[in-house]
Amino acid sequence: MTWYLDNLVCPRDRSRLSDRGSSLECAHAHRYPVIEGVPIMLVTDVAPTIDIAGASAAAEAGDPWQLSTLSLSDEERAGIARLAQQPGAIDPVVAYLVAATNGLMYKHLVGQLAEYPLPDLPLPDGAGRRLVDVGCSWGRWTLAAAARGYDAVGIDPSLGAVLAATRVARQLGRPAHFVVADARHLPFPDGSADTVYSYSVLQHLSRADAAAAVGEIARVLRAGGFAKLQFPTRLGIRCLYHQARRGFREPAGFEVRYWSWAQLRRLLGVIGPSRFEVDCYFGIGLQKSDARLMTPALSRIVGASEWLKALSRHVTPLQWVADSVFVESRKTCVASPVL
Image (cartoon, rainbow, N blue to C red; front, side):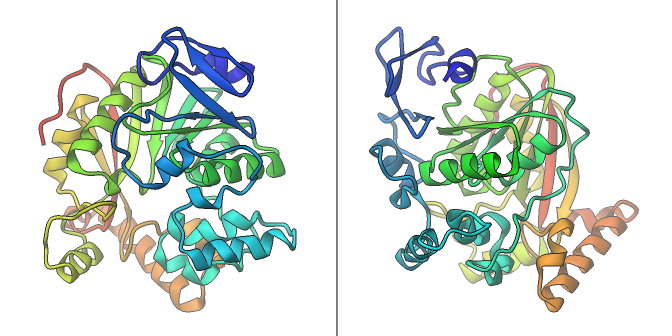
């Protein structure tokens, strides 16, 4: 618990925390439970961005899986329970979260994983610098960052996912820390992170909640630090298909929001100047490092995405129809984003 006391603050008032055994408490009596060694740093008097946050806040000790806090169907939760009775090389929760965290093209891997699909982090080596992974789920990108030498910390509102991340980190011997928290209320001191990373997360938030999360990212970044955040684009070929399927109506709840490049520049202006980088085509979440896990047909789609990605470096208009982009924003000054 020492690391958490040294590195976390109250997400409400930024004050230091004290260890109360089964909880952490700040000087203003805000209390945060600790379950299986993981602090639940959720602000419970605001509406959550996803229902599972409420389940995480209400969770009780004694259940290592915390299935009620996972964004999965009852059938998928039952599958986890079955796998938990047959211990194997792959964590049961990760075996079922893989499609939700890696994209729907990975559904064939659900319950069938033979190895953890850890991606290649698109960042330079960490050299001990602090990286915060916002919306880490089972820790896929956090663990990739730890492997590259970052002091990696993952946050997510799902207690079940965070507990899975801690188990996988321990199993693989990857030094990383995980916290249950809300992207709009990060439990870190001002200027405490060198890099903030987020993949396939902010797209699910309303425009207002995304702006609040980006404001928090700007706050916790040190001067000169940067955020690398992934977003689906409004003009991506696959993204246009999904927008058309729902009649181009405004998204609701946890549905995906699609962003124009101009909107992203305005949103991330709270951090500083931004540059864009193509992530993938034909979907959201396709990674070259996962191609070996794909069926032959899906592997060819990943290969085509990588080919277009390489070509887009020389043919600028191709960048505008990418389905997924990274936006890298370096902290300079703090201002309010305009959406």
